[in-house]
Length: 98
Image (cartoon, rainbow, N blue to C red; front, top):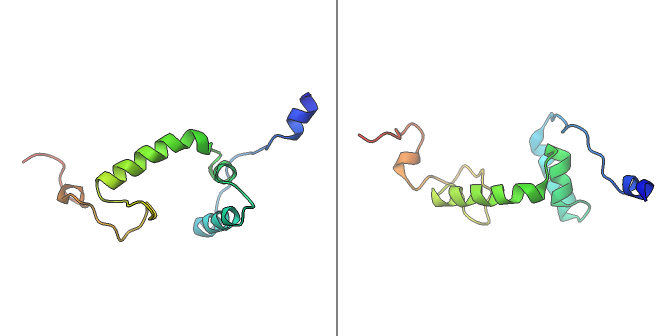
């Protein structure tokens, strides 16, 4: 039984460094779209993390980004075309009350 458990394990070392992170992410997306890999596998390989454990945090972060106008469902959270809803959230704005 021990041998069977070890042989079915996915052994992952430290997350690799990247020369071109955008290409690596594009390759991961292509593997997932081609059903060669899963989101959980790519999370493990790219960051060493666990997608299932990350999911609640991802939901929380996206909800916050949506509330301040920096993310809309169906878009990339890093999309630079989106602008904050609040003037207070713009770059250089003060968070202190006057």
